Image 1 (cartoon, protein in one colour):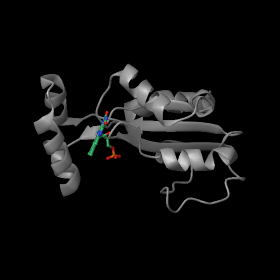
Image 2 (cartoon, protein in one colour):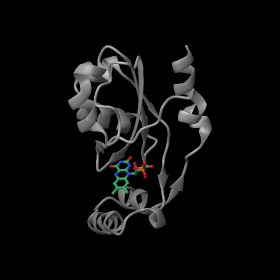
Image 3 (cartoon, protein in one colour):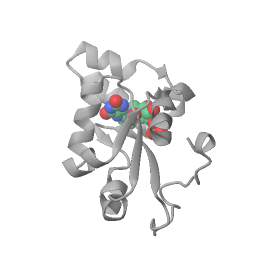
Image 4 (cartoon, helix red, strand yellow):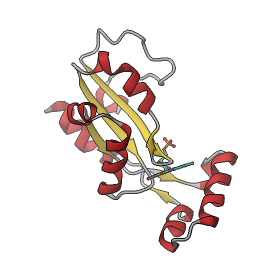
Length: 143
Ligand SMILES: Cc1cc2nc3c(=O)[nH]c(=O)nc-3n(C[C@H](O)[C@H](O)[C@H](O)COP(=O)(O)O)c2cc1C
């Protein structure tokens, strides 16, 4: 997104505290354990974000829109959901790129999962990171 837009790029820990100078804020996070990873940042900074064009790029293991919408609705207030624009962009789920702790938690939870589909989903790797998935968000930005 930063390459395609020329926007400044920050990590969530080094981004400016004062967002006053920004009209558009694009944030990127992932779904982790049924919650949006950048939830705390968005909620804490919502008073300064709410009058801007706010875009949330969201990676996830699932591509099921209903599941993603539920996670978004559970993570944010209706004001945040209705004012910002969330773009699910697929995700990357590769065991060799995860931390040892993440890998262990997933294997443990999958082991105890009673539903074969859930178990299979948790143990199936996927690689869906590509630039085309960002196009909808870029079109929205330029629109
Ligand atoms: C520990 C862990 C928990 C995850 N939990 C979920 C989940 O609840 N739902 C989901 O759709 N994807 C889940 N994922 C998949 C991630 O959203 C996906 O791998 C995403 O691409 C991660 O992006 P990131 O590496 O930028 O954090 C999980 C991944 C890990 C490693």
